[in-house]
Length: 394
Image (cartoon, rainbow, N blue to C red; front, side, top):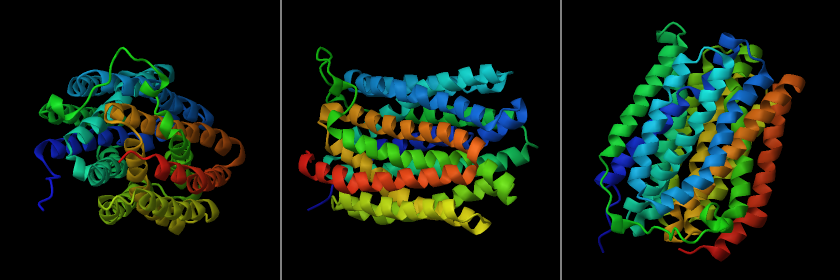
């Protein structure tokens, strides 16, 4: 029997558009602590506060994003938010004070959150139902590759521009424009998705209640990633003497992701969602252990490869859990719940990581990341996994 086609034109465009959105975002994230420190003289705890405001906005808008995506034409929502995401990059270029930068950074979280939710949901809509779980894994590869390659490209752009952060911001803006153009060419058949009734308002329209355990789980793992990924550049520079290692760190992360996604897609194709997720979280904890315990360049560079192997299994596994716990008319809500829990975890990691590293040192913050990661593993095996297997709809 012939399989349904996975790589249709719309899915390919959405993978590319999603890659460009995330690439433009992650192009600046790891270097923002250095930018705020060097340009405005901000302290570590202030940096954590400024950067976490962006995440707070994403968290606040994500539940509403799911409702909007499930209630209105999804492509229209996607294009409108893509445009706002592109336009607000200009704020970084013209912000002349720390306060003004913080304002633009915070506002920028709203269109980013809705763009990610809408793009993910439209991608699920255009996938054939028989290949949906496998497709989610490959779609997530575009997301994770952008997260990994963006910082590597950022270091290169910054070096070539002589340390001019304004050029880096402008380059990010151009990439966001490219994402808008690509996504605008996607053709959506309204029959391919089901919109929820706008007359019925309940908590489940804004947050996937059936996925609460998975949301708490994702929050734990995102917290650990938020601590490590945000402060590794300053940590490497101040304590290891690694001044150009951030780009290579994320490149190694990307290599791990690519290997993991390719091998993990086989499990997803066979609908082994829980197994794929379990493998990912067990591999990841090893990376956090190495980064926290060993203060050396080899640990600095080995960790991202291990985390890439783990995240490449874990992230699509959890996303598939959310989608399979939701009805078709709740796909936007499922994706927004995943995003909310991830961004909430990252935001807490950024904020608390800054506070703990300021007063007790970086390794104390890294040990905290490891402890929260272990807590997430226990929650997965004793709560999230059994709940998913008992309540999945597909």
